[in-house]
Length: 485
Image (cartoon, rainbow, N blue to C red; front, top):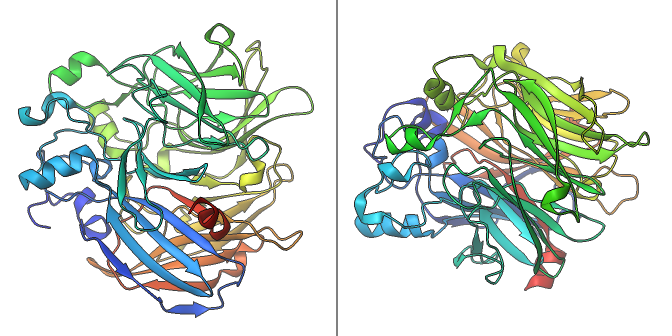
């Protein structure tokens, strides 16, 4: 792993590793709850070859599917590259062939027309199928036992959209997976494709409509009766791409929007409601319909786009501590009439998580990560350049917030593991990195009581291998894996 530019995206915790490996019977510190049986899948961007451009970013890394498997009180670890068409082409050539982030005009001419997604953002489990996703293309199917890549996935030829979000929503009541793709019919397109996959894995509906402008639509939300499509002013431009520029820039003067679509509606049923200018949201905690008939959408909001490479392309620089907003609740009428009421319900942070059973419904608690400045400087690394050092548990209706401090450590997004004990909030599992020096780290999976995060981890599973920061993860129970097998 040589020849990488010495910029934050490729040094320290972000140093490329590029190794497929497996470790069994990992050392466990503390007590691992016996009811934790299943697999914690993680999406890890990790470039195999030095990039064509020295100002590349961590989001361009080849996708790796990682798994920490819990079984019979033991744990093992495995990680393997996703054999996307892009990865296979570069492996055959022995060098990087694809250029700037999401700009095909900067690729080597020999790979023109090759699927360029890296499938590096979120592992998704639904209907007995494991997918690796990234929002710029269709997903790739993975064998959950061997982690081998089965192939590009389009739901048996039913999916017409060229893209699929990395943030699907699974309705625990109906068993449906709801998803969407933006730039659905090509580069810089305003077209959104909303689709529904039944509990049997068959795509049952695909609805196409246009957004107010082409935006980086990283996440969306559902309620019992609606699908919600936030549009924020991180935009693209075909002329800029053809000139070799960046895919995304952020316009702090452009308005945001929320698209509201009945879950069984058509394109004619979409309603748009205007939001504030310049704001940015990457991740959504949850949404639900209130007793007053209004929709409540809870999002991790910042004052502007927080990604350094997007700020550079946009001609401004705002440090994270100045761009932070908070966990904000946007409330509005389902028909799009009136204005959006916005109020804070929690401090700044990101990587939110709820219990799967609460998806699209009123919920009593959720979890997300934050940077607590009182714990010192955060560990440098990850796709935005700085890692989180605290875990929050929030009760959105009461305002109660509990915290697990982890100063000197780097926390990655947790997954929620349900408990079989009535009244128990379940467990959270997350990868935690501890720096020993500038280029040496200890890595472990921490297991935390979801209802008592302030108590800290009840167990730590030691990973005896260098790790690169993940993006997102997904928990799959042993029962679900066994049923699929």
